[in-house]
Length: 253
Ligand code: UDP
Image (cartoon, rainbow, N blue to C red):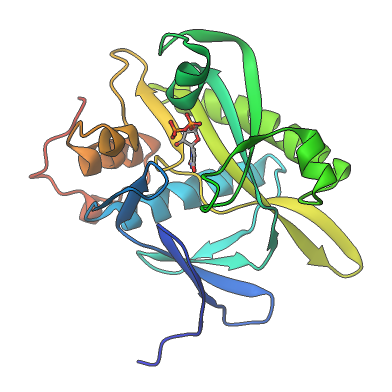
């Protein structure tokens, strides 16, 4: 079968030309990277799980009026998305101290933050995604003040919504990363959620045991990475019977 034209290949996904103008096909790979690409691995089945989990979360967000690039899932590893102009800023929202925040400020992992903290990182592999301020973003023209206002408002709304959604299935949303894009429609442009929302870019801890159920299992060689992602999918109710490998033990019961 002739493959569609490859538009872009990232670390965990490939973007292909879509069936109609203004659309793309987002393909989820099993590749995992960490520490600015210095660690690479394959987590067999991760792409299938992230495709499902991200589909589910993007649909729930659309239901509450948060615009996203997601159109529909096409198959096990692919989803149809609207073509957007990606804003080169990673928006990280934190509720509980973990990862780079702990290192930077010497805060103990697991400390509940006094309020949600929003950070911006400039998307650049070469520079290692540096933390930047609004001043850098606007001065260097990566996004406008309006874009930043939109990303902040949407990000906080998404955080509140997802915190509740995950808590409902026994998971703590510790922190997560969002990407946004500009969607050009008729004469208008609006900022929408792009990329994916999955255990690759969310820290999720079991609400009872604080067990890590996300990419930190890969980053820190904790093992059972796929099983953790599978458990997140199972709790969200997005695994159909056929997808559940009953022979695989669950991380948490
Ligand atoms: N994150 C991400 N992509 C990145 C950097 C961070 O998806 O390139 C996510 C990460 O999974 C976590 C949150 O953003 O949920 C905060 O990550 P942090 O700044 O603590 O960086 P890390 O510890 O991953 O280096």
